[in-house]
Image (cartoon, rainbow over all chains, first blue to last red; front, top):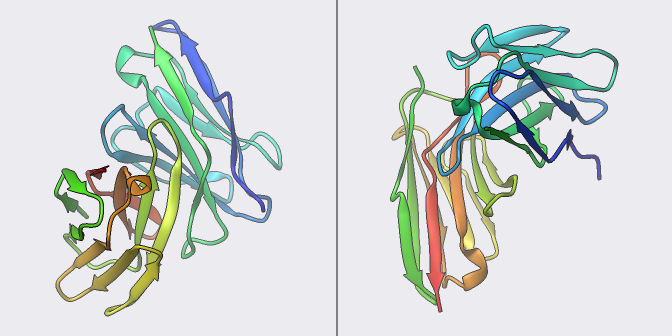
Length: 113
Length: 111
């Protein structure tokens, strides 16, 4: 069964460093998303991406964040200069259209020290 | 702005008992989802509810949707320990299919 895959599963980085979280969406899906979940809290929407551009972003998704689809398969989230409060689980998701269910990857746990 | 509230936040129940988790949302929406999350794991889709009066059941879990009241419920029947997890409802909002999640309900089923 097709699934969304994310790498790495766990990333530890020093404050101020750049990190790139990687996702491979399901192959025929056209809409891509990033969500984050701070430990013990709810899941929060970060950004949606369609047709090679951001279609919507939340207040959390400030200038430190960027997304890219560098080739036909990967979808990346870059955090330019990490802060302690960026420590969270980051989930990638994809859907076929804007009106169908999104499927989530297994997540990347980011720890900023 | 679409807001989603869930209650209770924490639910401790004994095996064999029944209980209901409630999910209220603030504006009209196309779809409502229920997810299960085990500690440190991803989100497992349980139900997708699309229309008013929709009811779906899987094993000991049953979800329903009342779009007029903007309320969904997740009913647990005769709970077993394996159901212990955090349950989230989520509502799709906006043109981009983003999901707005509720606060989650941590369910602990005691033997």
